[in-house]
Length: 262
Image (cartoon, rainbow, N blue to C red; front, top):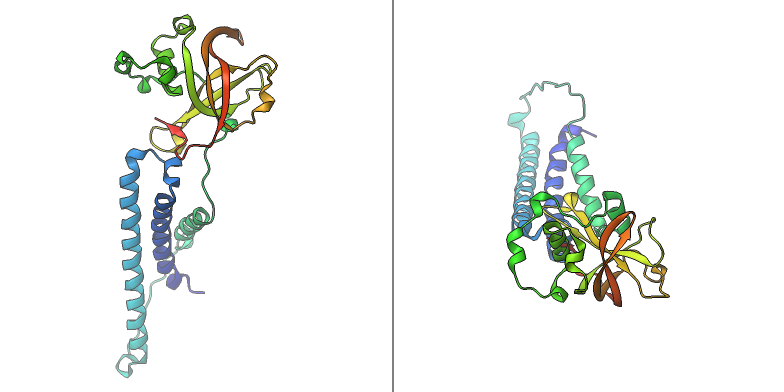
């Protein structure tokens, strides 16, 4: 097999495949679990651009092949000899395109999934946000406690980390179940991933939840989604005073189409 002949085709196919992959994620709604919605337009434009470039490159290669065949069958060109200069490279010229095409094909044949509770534990579950995510001006609103999302509760704790400030307030939040290994069976965490740009920089946040008397967290499987109602309380967990959710209702819900928060 002549690598010099196949390499341009691999380039064109890799470009086309990546364009198709980006458009597939957009059409199927899977783009929301890979990047922030702010970049949907840019990704869509990039996918269309790649398909156009790949299509044009494919058309040029087909045209070049037709021209080459015609020149070979023309008697006037039989006496024409072309001297090719060999270039020595460390890797075959098609290696990059082959890798890019392979990755795109894997993406087309598989379905991306959201991060799991195990990922949250590995990345470091916390009830705090990076400094760059703090927005004190948002705390001036008059949102009722039971209308705050999980990330809004975490923002409040970053603004004022004293848990007694929020003791006894009503809570109604949604998130996925996390089972930290070092907590008693009567406790678990409810969490969400926050995404700032893409899935690579997503990080987990959450709050501990105290279940009803007689309940065990084994009833609620890790990664299952719940809507939890109750009120806030303060307890010492792992040697630290923490704001916890004293649950009064735990209702299973389907995983949201967009599982991340911002």
